[in-house]
Image (cartoon, rainbow, N blue to C red):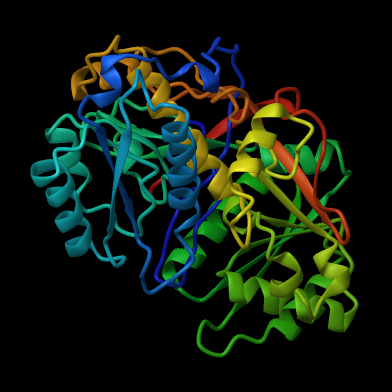
Length: 425
């Protein structure tokens, strides 16, 4: 498995996904998609994007991948589409509910007849089994739940090694590596880590998973739990300071993270890193953490895709140029862009006859994919048993006021051989 952990709760827990290294797959250039001639008048290729744009978690929590994907398709169409065929995007907001998700899946697959789903980002993927049964490829979705490690024809943005035979992972257990914890121990010298969670089931379960991984890497772990309804972040911050924590991990929502950081500044708790996840890797940090300048500048993010601020990279520059009209930028937008490119590469390989089966065949061919270097190599295999250990890589960035997110090394070389730990989603 490529994940260090994944989970979701009504509190808004969208958690970090891990990564793995592999060889690069040569991919066609973005500008080589269109062709002149009669095909330009052909019927458009229809794709669907399901997003929990309105949900209990909040209106903007899930929209990043959608915005990145639509930006890619807009630019692709402006350049002639795929073999002269426009990509027509059908959006569906499932409202963050299972019923809404099932309704979206039915509408897009059975009524709109989309050739694929792209950049799915939903709180409750209740329609996943229907997507799989219809053999509709779902490309580059965010694995908030276990669906992408459960069903065939679903291809999450980070890959999977699981059998995907209708049961999550292997016998109901998923596996993830400890590369994030290894990084901060090896590269930053951290030895004591605090894990802060709510007294809420999903939050507490994720905190136990993080604690398990930290202990496997030899950390001394300090656990802090706050009341979900009336959290006392100041007391938690004071204790982690007293315990001498080098790192802080959390199982909190965005608001809780901001409040924890504020409390850490108030009590003078200084750490090597306050580690956050890919969902919070955004340009809104100055506003979100406006009351905690010291903690704000101790924010680190880890993930499986190239820093959206790294404009020294040509693929990132193209993404940023196409999305310059957006008010904010985020890592999830970049991953949505990569998901759309993945579909375009798959459809472009179908030699003018783009069908669900052809696109699915491209996705399921077992070769690594990087979206032109935006992603760590993504693979989909079906191993009979979980790996005991695996070489895993990660993308790392830290926030610096005045500079934004600053990449820390080459994500394709920041790699470790780490154990794979099992957990139940």
